[in-house]
Picture 1 (cartoon, one colour):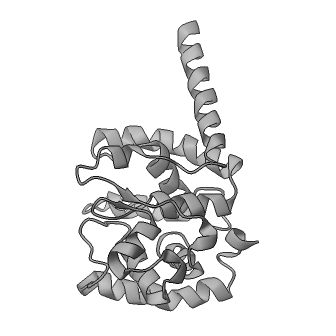
Picture 2 (cartoon, one colour):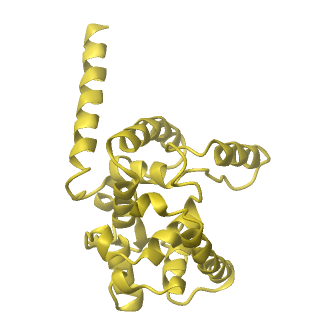
Length: 221
């Protein structure tokens, strides 16, 4: 029992220490990157050099309550659980904070490993919400999220798809990148069709609402 307590305490201290470190330094690499057979293309970019359209697009697509929740959107989680209970394809209710915690500290995983990861995801989400601010969470999210095959971060994605910096993305370009985030290996950003195209157009239309309503205010206050 003493050994177990020491292991748990060591994990808590180490995880908190690494989380605190990442508040100030760029995340060098993640488990997802290291296990990607397609290699890694990335370019860490400060949030100040990422167009505000991309931030608004991410919020519109992934987490409309980003600035008001404490890391978890209980309503979205409950709705996802109800849909999943009805059968069919599993859907998540993860916030940007949860996705950031998963992408930085954990693995993707399917089956039983997915459920094992979820418990740790709660802990790391709690840590980043208390040791980072919302601006830092968004900055890290936009730098480690997979944006294409072997491509990580919106800067690398912008260069790959549009031949330009993430600092000058148009609303539609940002929206198309955001529309592909849930499945970057299969959804086309440059020439989207069907659902991805329609979803991208919807996100693009929401960008103005996000900015005008201050849904991204916590990132820029």
